[in-house]
Length: 124
Image 1 (tube, rainbow, N blue to C red):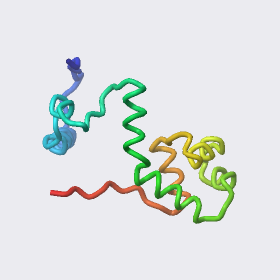
Image 2: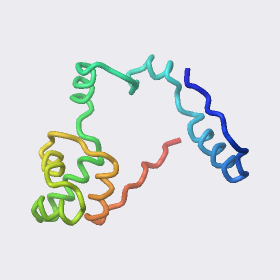
Image 3: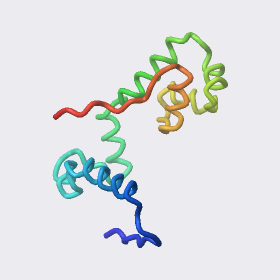
């Protein structure tokens, strides 16, 4: 069980509102036991389990969109790396499918390519 964090001061009304908003946002999401009962568990897994999952998952839409946008520029990977502030080897391995990228790196690439990172709309 997670250890509780004790606050040194009382929360402001704005902080209380943000905490309530965050709790409400996650209230409808399944807990760990429900996720483990399905195939949607994302907790710790062995390397074999991860590789099998990754093979089934394929590229995420964000990955596909970034790769397509990079290719569409017609610029060299080096110039894109320099312009976006992403290390050239990181960009090269990402485009070659040898590694994923962090959200921070995706944000840098998206900003350079004129794209926006937006959450998918919720389906009710």
